[in-house]
Image (cartoon, rainbow, N blue to C red; front, side):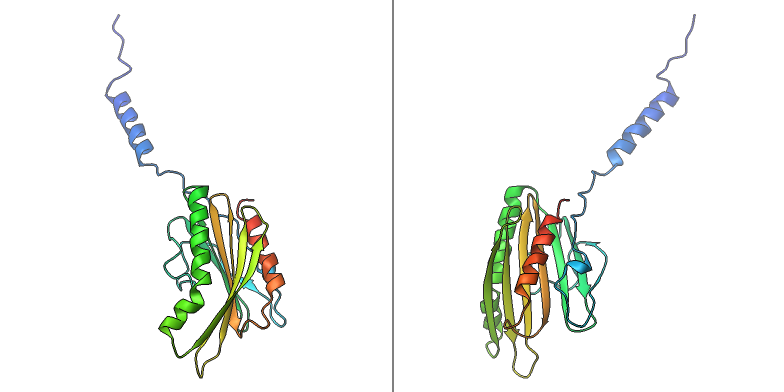
Amino acid sequence: MFRRSRTGPVAVLAAAAALTLTLATPATAAPAPGFLQARDLPPHPSSAWFAGPVAKGLPEVPVFCLEGALPAKDSWHRQFGTELDTGAVQVSVRAESPGAAAQLAAALERKVAGCAADWLRGHPEGTASWRDYGALAVEEGAHVYGVHTSLPESEPGVGLYGIGRDGATVTVVRWSRMGDLSDVPVPAFKRTTTTAVHKLNP
């Protein structure tokens, strides 16, 4: 008895289509890390914080002190603001391995620690200073710094930086406003940084 082959033209085309679909399907993208909420930022004395969406890639305006140091690949960011002069941004990066993440976090810390001196070389007419506010015992560790810059006849600016790591994920939180290092909310910002690292891989 003659039986129709199960590997006829229709079956071959179906198999080819399935193979093409499999080859064309991209690899699963890395999920976005967890991010801070507006309520996690240091309280502002006269304004509520508001948060933008978590967005893929780096912020349009580079993070001051870290220009060119944050990789765009596998990065996400979130902007925060108030009704006044205080703002913040968080950038998180999923590195290829915990070792690569450790190297990135160390490089970011060096950039922030050297930021005031680097800025002064380009702005010799200005003044700048920085402080190391110490390490935080959270996951694989975090560190907090402060940087102040000022130009003649211009408002001074100050920023706090929290840099931390959980496994292969690194995060940077920058809080900024007009002013200097004399009255920045260091204890509250340390809590913000600790929360940011805890939220990376919930």
